[in-house]
Length: 206
Image (cartoon, rainbow, N blue to C red; front, side):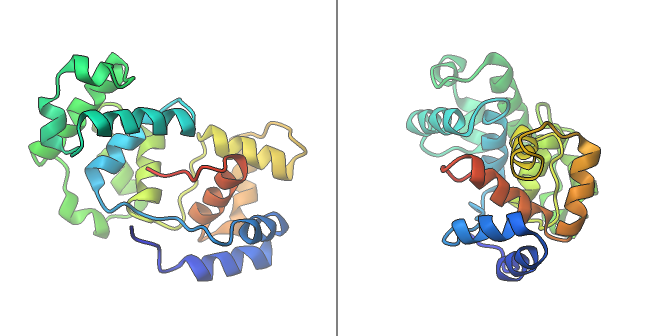
């Protein structure tokens, strides 16, 4: 596991600017964002986690690990559909995982250049893979690349947490979220992570 070197600075600055952030950072002071260090499995976990709860996604992923202990582009390519279906994956998600595996096996993603790309350029590259939309790409930037300033506007959990903590449980639109998050820059990934933690005791991870 890899922890961002900017975490202490980010939490200090967020806590000094934002009362809600200060409370959440104090509440979860033993927890930090961590990267598992494997690009393929992080993207695969993000696909698995689409449109289901953190708990459900973890359950499906553990079943996949039981069936395929070493999740790689090669093992996903070789895995039979029935085996993947038995793990709780839909046909659509199986197709997405296979296309992801193909991109890695055929070197269609410029992995060696990722560190040099800005967030938006990397997102554009990642969404060429079937099943990877902007949300999944943003999860990858946060959880694998450890990019500090990603704001996943389409994330339901983020929307719900902001409504809960800042707007008396009212629904909020993307414009409102962007305005609120201005004060979090350049640490919007960190603020997002703490808001996720406030909703679910199970740490969000991909």
